[in-house]
Image 1 (tube, rainbow, N blue to C red):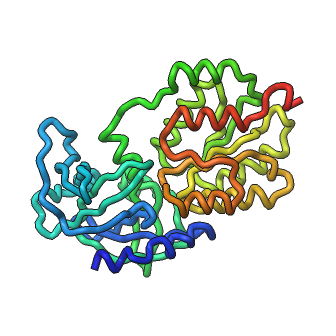
Image 2: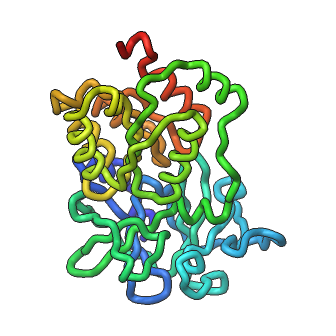
Length: 310
């Protein structure tokens, strides 16, 4: 069954280029449905034997061999406040790739794949009680589906600071960028915080948006302001509610007052398909999350300097 679910993933995920997303649904211990973008899923397997890892983070259930590679296995149920799945014999292992790293997640009840319109995905109300580890909700056949912010889960396990190297800090300080202001669009709280921190190190101000629709609205507002108060560059996630990064880039290119903006798509999605889509929507650069020096270098290369801005 898991193999059949994922055998056509690449074909299905091409819907993302049209502000649609294919999601794999699963449960974590009760009737609540959760979802993850299938383009981030490599494979779904019955839970293999796990090796315990003394001293590991509490959410790490262990490690396992995945096609010759040792990967950490995270108990996604425990991460979202459910009883741990470590000793649940019916648990599945969902192997994922985020930002070029591979890890497994334990889930209790694998469901099926569904297609969702980007407009149907919205930020969850705090009253729903999901907290910051769910960044969007939608309904599928009347049932509430919560989209897991996997970046937040991974960041809670690996809290390594993402700082610019000394060499890149010197390069950023020597480059006379103008204006030192960019728009950041990302639905993940942890990603927004990291980006704001990175650009602060570069002495660049951020205008922040939580999804593609909000980003487009802000860009229209900024386009009506004097040039020194606007932005020249957008750094956008790809997978977002309302309007994804592909659709946002298309909208920018189709709007006369915005089409000259530089666009960097910054995402944990990876692979040849994603690179092809970046070219198709005419983005200026793709940088995989989260590589601070590579992103900073892209910004330095794409933002105009003082002379060019005059």
